[in-house]
Amino acid sequence: MHVLVLGAGVVGITTAYALAEAGARVTVIDRRSGPAQETSAANGGHLSASQARPWATPAVPRQLVKWLGRPDAPLRLPLARWDPELWRWGMRYLRNCTPARYRANAQSLLSLAQLSSDALEDIVASSGVEFDHHTGGLLHLNRSAKSLDRAQRDTERLLVGADLLTAEECARIEPALASAGARGLIAGGLLYRDASTGDAAKFTAALAAASAHRQVAFRYDTEVDRIEVASRTATGVHTAAGLEAADAIVVALGMGSRALLAPLGIDLPLYPVKGYSITLPASPAEPRLPRIGIIDDDRKVVFARFGTTLRGAGTAEFAGFDTRIDDRRVRPILAAAQELFPGPFDGATAADANAWTGLRPMTPDGPPILGAAPGVAGLFLNTGHGPLGWTLAAGSARILADLVHERTPPLDPAPYSVARFHAQ
Ligand SMILES: Cc1cc2nc3c(=O)[nH]c(=O)nc-3n(C[C@H](O)[C@H](O)[C@H](O)COP(=O)(O)OP(=O)(O)OC[C@H]3O[C@@H](n4cnc5c(N)ncnc54)[C@H](O)[C@@H]3O)c2cc1C
Image (cartoon, rainbow, N blue to C red; front, side, top):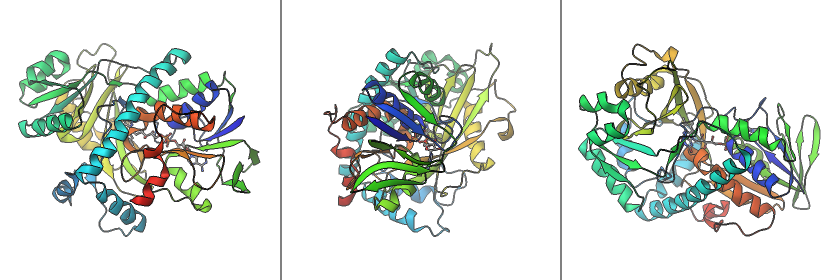
């Protein structure tokens, strides 16, 4: 069986690997010159089932009002811009902010993230890929007693296991936080022991290299223009090089998925939610870098250490497909790093921060879109992973490989099917 995987981000490459492991001959096609060059290039690096929660929460409508018009708000809405796509998506998003929808969406995400955690272990064992994986857990920090209380209640409600810590205990687990604790910046935290951090781009590049030894071919610098469908069956894709034929096609194009599927009458409710990251280099002997992954809840910024660099990531901006860097968004992430970890980055400016932006392919409810495309045989979807594509990639790939090979997947795929949006 020859399968085309469209997209060489973390989702596409993981899918290609899973398909090849299951016996398929695979060709990956991407418009970029190599793997992980769009949204998977420099993300926050957190791998956490306990943080796999929908962004559509019952608290959002109230928070939105608070953030409106604030230039440093972690979530920014362009009220002055008329974008019918955004309003349509936004209405669906708000309909998912009820407590019942939140619980159901959170459960779908949690199940997929738990599957992904096991699937990632299997991939690492079979491929031997290295990606600065640190398995010491994640420390969720709160700067005020009020936000700590809210975070703890949310964790209890979702039945996710976490240890409640004082500021002193946080600093004991992560000595790089001792100064922030002493300056009263930390009210306390939650420790998620089963979570980890790792460099998604390094993983994707290493897995692509490992896949090349397993019947996976790569066509880079190749834009997919359209999917060929004959007698309601997908038969290949058109690129500048002509028609590439296949027995099955998996669309893993992140935010590129929507445009490619629209001509087939498949309407994916995806919206690009722009995020920023910074990557701060430190000297190899620097003792003040954190080791554990950190969530600065009040600043809505996450941190992960890869080797001798510190990655910080955050912000959610509805700016269409605009990926330009605005230093006003970079500065709050840098400031959070400088506050929590004084020393290594003192005096750094936005220009020193290796700032990057990426477009999270967001569904309005949270879970990604996995499974058979409606009305076109041989066409499969693995997209819409939003803020969680690194966390969910391995499990999504396992489900997709089973569906393509007509085997029963380890999770019921119904909650991830595109058909769910007919009811929303
Ligand atoms: C700031 C930020 C922080 C994040 N932090 C985390 C985190 O800590 N943990 C986590 O789990 N997730 C995180 N994410 C989310 C995660 O990065 C994404 O969900 C994930 O990278 C999406 O992967 P993908 O493979 O679907 O998309 P992409 O990586 O964008 O890959 C899609 C590929 O399709 C290609 N493509 C598109 N259209 C075409 C076409 N027509 N023809 C050919 N090729 C095409 C592109 O070139 C691209 O390579 C973060 C995202 C951002 C922006």
